[in-house]
Amino acid sequence: MIEILFSAGPESWAEYEAPLREALDGHGLSYRLSCDAAPESVDYIVYAPSSGLRDFTPYTRLRAVLSLWAGVETITGNETLRVPLARMVDEEGLTAGMVEYVAGHVLRHHLGIDAYIVNPGHEWAPVVPPLAPERPVTVLGLGALGSACAKALAGLGFPVTGWSRSPKDVAGVTCLHGEEGLKTALAHAQILVLLLPNTPATKNILNAGTLARLPRGAAIVNPGRGPLIDDAALIAALDSGQVGHATLDVFRIEPLPAEHPFWAHPGVTVTPHIAAETRVSSAARVVAENIRRGEAGEPLLHLVDRDAGY
Image 1 (spheres, rainbow, N blue to C red):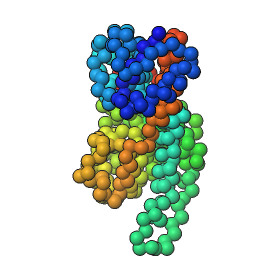
Image 2: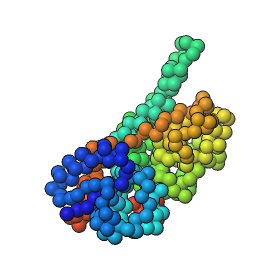
Image 3: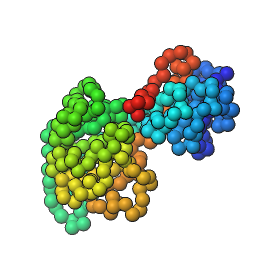
């Protein structure tokens, strides 16, 4: 009998219990799924970093922690966690949602749609945008989400440059890496999409210096992580016209405080962390598949590199 502890909060339990049972039953597994299993009996923990569980020492039989979140930066440094940690990579739900969000906002900036939606003077002022092949887009971060978004944008006809810390190969995308690669990727970015993880190496990757490398008037879309951007530097770049607009879905503090200057700035669109919400039914299938793999002795999917932080 497999003992599975659900540690993601009572509201999530109400949403996940039935889909998880259905997915686990589909694999023919013999299991007990609960929110209150005795620590010494637990084989797998279905986990959300917001759950409050921080000490994994009592879980002496634990085989793996399966996160319901894509972001795991708050747990990777936990020294009591000595078993494999898998993050949520859900192509059916989370990835598809991110691709739709990114494609929608890139097209919005590319087409200049805001000028027509917000037109207080009722001016007849047609501005014909360039076609997609004339609008270079850069995606920083070529993990599962970044690669999917880069390929989707390339499929729409945009010339897409992708940058990552280590070499990657994504069909239809010019892939760069390293410090010099970052400089080139930024220089080509009329629209810049941020999909990097939050690590010490990526914190404030968009700062006064890197923002200055963008083409003047570039648009930024950040559905990745809030700490990727130096907030004060971005405000200064918007005020000077170096950055034309920033669409931000993630922030250092969430919900974004009412007094934060992003709310009132005419060059900022705030969305409330909605770009890639985990979809319960498909996420449950991802978790169940990893438990099946664990029981079959197969490698787990989407394992976190604890040293890299993602």
